[in-house]
Image 1 (tube, helix red, strand yellow):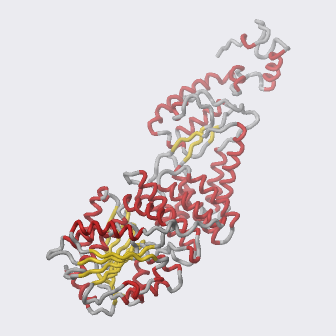
Image 2: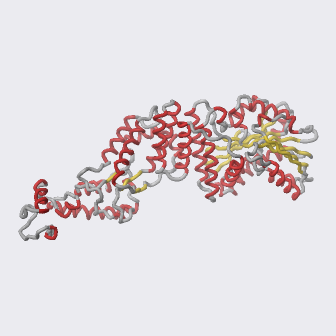
Length: 609
């Protein structure tokens, strides 16, 4: 290929040529450089910083045509098989660069770990990672916009990332063999800038639009596999928790920073969950414990948004109300003692159901118990006034009393103005409250004793279906990561973005308490249905089976809520569980004092129907 270079000579001279002629100015420099490079480099591309022999120009042109053709063929699939964290950084050898690009674009089926790496990663990760990660997505193409002066820093951080993950103790990450093998593959692909590489020139031949990059961008392209980073993210979370348990705070601190870096590549629920767990781990590492409890007004706001976003609280209220309604059948005067009053959202539906009862509604008395307000406002009384207005509208005789208590363990049966069971039937209701008592030794036993003194017809208990109260921090962390990953995933279909964000904050506060706090400050001590059964049995309560009617109506409730896609109701020995994709998340159970001879008869009657 011929090129006219005369316009580049300082003193135009027809006799000047690439390897001879002028010995002054730039001509001499070119002459010396040409001599060092076997006198065969194309000058125009050499000025731009690319080494292409004149004899290779035809071959380079052919490779460019091949590359353009291949790029057009693979454009539809998003070039997903290039997602191997490869960095192409301004190569000076254009022919070699084109060869590597062609080999990358026409490879065998892409395997991000390699044949051996896939097996090792799967063995090390197991079902733990599978349960956290969303379905595999196509790899994403990302550009980093950074200036020359901080390029080295980013490469250094990448190297630090690999080092920190290799230093993870125990079996929380890939075994050392697969990790080192995988790391070597990456290091061979990553080309760092050299002194011979021009700093700001990206190879012009491949069309920028083919990569999904604006044509005016001249910065390096980094291909990121979000699925692989998702696996690394879960491993980093588990490794950080293991380091915290071993009190290796230096390693834990390094890993927390890695978690934030890896979470950026994730989308949706996984990124949010990882961010909240990273915050909780950081608080534990730096001993920046969250304030507890939350301001009551903020807690109420978050609680209401969670109620609107997803069906969990609606399911809890509905199933508990159904059990209470059946227990009150035929009673003329009824009394509900609510351990979780909040905004009283559970009771309008029960009052309306009582109003429609054949033969007329009973006299309804409600005792609401809640924490004190930070601004000294009587919020429980305000809730009572609203319910009283509703009762007047639907013609239900209504009596209300609010009790402020720092803890349910501070209550005594004599404070509640109880009436003889022949006169008034009592029901006790608790939604997400009993687990908080486990932070104080003996508190749960005291409350169970007080409840038995109330001689209730029924006790309804709704609790999270999880075990976040174990003695080993790493086990507790693993269980909570499973649990909240599923919860956050179920929120993704929320219609209202505001409700969704506030609900995530609501759950994030719980994550922070489970992970960052200890002792009396750790109040989110969730336990499973099996554990609550053991506690209630030991305290002298017998189960009351929730009938098939409650099961069917709970299913109808879910069908009304966003079509019920993903949600499912499961019956477990007379208790009802609501879950997301076969993972139970909350459980409603009903109980009665075992020494009440009518307990077993009531339970049998419910099951028969």
